[in-house]
Image: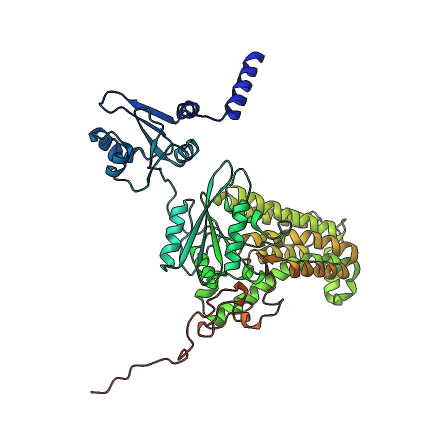
Length: 504
């Protein structure tokens, strides 16, 4: 057993360290994979060899479009064969690195008479799930079209929504092992050249082994990877992607990922649901204000409970204070322990529901919350008032339209509770100042994170905390620093024409 193990280790190290120097050595090395095919046909006048990965090529296209042409071809050169094959993406190469890379991408290699040159034909098999409605960013109004894991399908969805000749898509290959294809999409002239050059330079400098999802790239491209605040938006909605690109942003699409990255962004865009643009401006503005109040309440509700009950109980009205005293009379724990118990319980229910099948997860969240909450109150582990506060805080956090921002809100609540326990309301204020200072210093691809509040840009307020009518949104955001700032000409924008019909 020991000698066999040493043989396997020795073989693995030898295969990993030696680089093939000839085409035959490369084919012999690739044959160690069960899905690699090296078919030789010596019966015809022109012997040939086909090399490919069976798991990557479209076998139907191979037998329908390639093999009949090869059998009928009487030419002695790869150049002539290239001209008669009914495939667009064909190249001839003798470079071993290029041949191996193309084979791993799903190309078919054709070799005539053991020549060192190989004809590489792209017949890669593309499998992806059907288009479906977004599962995370669901909305009542608006299109129900979400991204999938296939890069070309996602590019098609964006190109159909922006059929403009200046829509640019630049491709990069990221990952020393995974060789993941990444596309940066933007509208030339609308997007800032500085932002585009910055993201392209960062992608070129990216050095990592395996890129499995767009979230890997997002964490590596952000200005401050240590911050808990997202500096790019993860989205699966095509309308959000094209809408931000129209403002002047860029989108990053990743092969194998159903989420795109949008940048640069500011903090206000994390609190805006794209469904707001499908509602009337007054209703959308009202919902935005409600959403912002709910997010703020979600962060500070339980810390204020700890601070006031620990240090500032005189702030409560006498009637409410009597209710609090009666609800906490049998509870043996301090307010901070009580709050931590319920907050952790809510997060455990949320995580358990997210990791289980959909129907089971919904049932677990509802039933588990009711059962555990009722049992905790009856067992005198927590008070009724705190249970209501924690439940409302959890509901308020779900109003955040960007999922990563929801996680940030959940995280900020815990250190704020600790500050409230040690310093009371002063601790809450100090932690708030710390977060505000951090956000003022934070940037997204060099753009200020708190714009248009800081630095103040009044012209960008028309679509931040509230949304004005579209006729008043003639200019794009100054935040994106694009060249083409006007969206439309404002001449006669307020005039609405009516047809007059003469009475017969």
